[in-house]
Length: 258
Image 1 (spheres, rainbow, N blue to C red):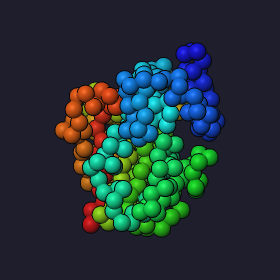
Image 2: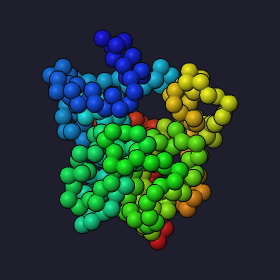
Image 3: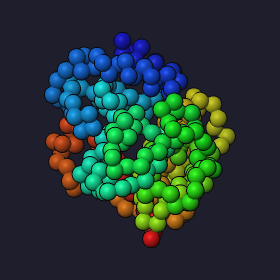
Image 4: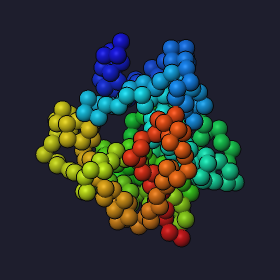
């Protein structure tokens, strides 16, 4: 069963996985009944989370079986809920690129949000376009989410410049990426084109780079200012273990100056 799960996770196209996940969540609470781990997004507890990731970057006990949150989703949710005005500010215009399944319905239900989703191909997005050239007007949004996208695109700085353009002055963005903190500099090699080699070098078969410690320099080069949210200052070791957060992860908040 475990081998079948890993095979389907790595081989099925993303749109099909999204659709199948809605069926799996019906039985997940029964199959993984317990209290060892807890997801702050769906507010359900389980005996364990599912494993996730490629052969090169596979991780155990990280994927919530109900709403499919990973470590990064749970960290972002905690920040938004407990350390920002995202759920309480009277009106926020939000652009959500590559909208995560665990967030989309919850954000759509928020009466304080003017919420728009977009993606190149995702069946759950409102609009479909290439991030390198966003077909939307300048300074439209207060908040932008664009997570685990920049490792896929041809030119991340151009994409970030487009997101900067559609943000209002004073607006902010969360743009999470896989980050190898052992690398001072981002690793790219355009000669690596096969899925197998890309997985070996960049952790996933459809990645074209692996960001290093210098990741914030990318959004900063197009005008963003970087703030760091250190969750270790706000959550105990017991909470971090219960939520299965990634100990080394850094959540960057990128702000557009007034």
